[in-house]
Length: 479
Image (cartoon, rainbow, N blue to C red; front, side, top):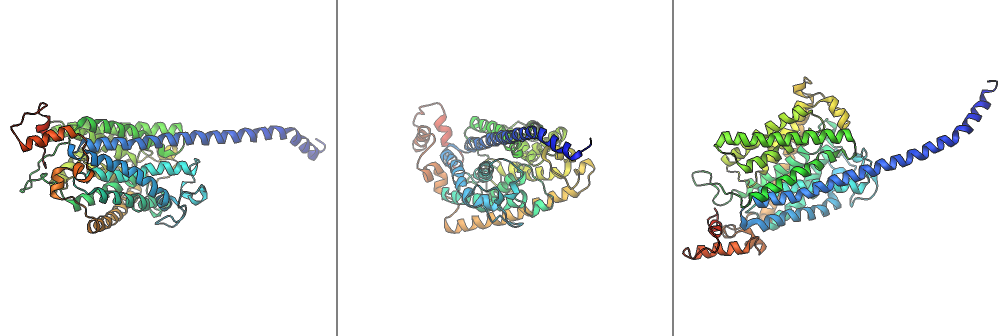
């Protein structure tokens, strides 16, 4: 070519329309991907929101019928109150730009992604990021509800739930998901074994310890006197709803419609839940001589909690192993807490605290760098200890567990103590005997059955209108 410059000009003129068309084609492709991601994240958020129906059914099924309305009301109020306080301050404290300990920008969730740099990796709108994270925040507070059931003042629990959603959960979350100091140390928790579950579990444990056991739960010599739940159908249905909701909880944490990542996370999540449920069933059978449906249900939940942190970092076989360990751990946890007179009506501390801690440490034991990179785009400090990677990642996980545990115990302990001094935590002995539905809520879930039960107490010779139903209600431990 005699004149290269003339050729370059001529070629650019010819190619300009094609380049313009390519740019125009790329823009809709990006917009389409953002739309797909947004729909995916919202769908998962709706599943997590629906998990609160599961919590309500599970917890109300595992308490006595005289406390059902109270438990349902607590679960409902947690979602409503967290929606407000997390919007006002919680989301900013957790994800706003700030320092290593707390976010300081983004109050009232303005539509400005630059205020939330820790979430810049997700392409969905700020409002979608907020809603997805808000339903997680409500989950952490709901964990506390079941553990303190049947003896806490309704007003005290509501105030504590507000503090959880506004301050305690967001600060701990900022350290890990908001770009805080634990994230800087390489601590990993993909979907919340620590951020959601152990934070809720630590807060529940402190509350249970301060409240003390339900009246009639333990004899004077320390002998355990079981207080069975009133409706195992409700508990089982609630657990199935929670299991379903976890398919939004874990894969939704990708915040992107990435087929490979979503598929892997769904697979390992289900494997851990299934193996934990099976192992908890047969392990209980071996330990006490009979299978126990309550521990089977909690076994499934234990596997789900344990896989929540490592779901984007471990293979299928290790997910099965995580479930096996969680299935044993939850059964032993329930028995251990009972021996220590830690009365948790639904087993929340065993499920969410013990298995949340284990699941977090499992990242340091079983994480595979190849899976972590392809599924989560994450760089591990080292491969898991059992994969020959040394102790680097495990120590980062252990440090995170200890730091979050210490903070949550201190913060929730202070909150519970103030509430005990100002409002009072525990209802009177008379109100506990009557039931919180009448004493605190002024209504009953099963008014006809309860009325027949009280009639039989007043006149044991009175004929029961329906076979044994009222008598069973009258003979429930604790009244």
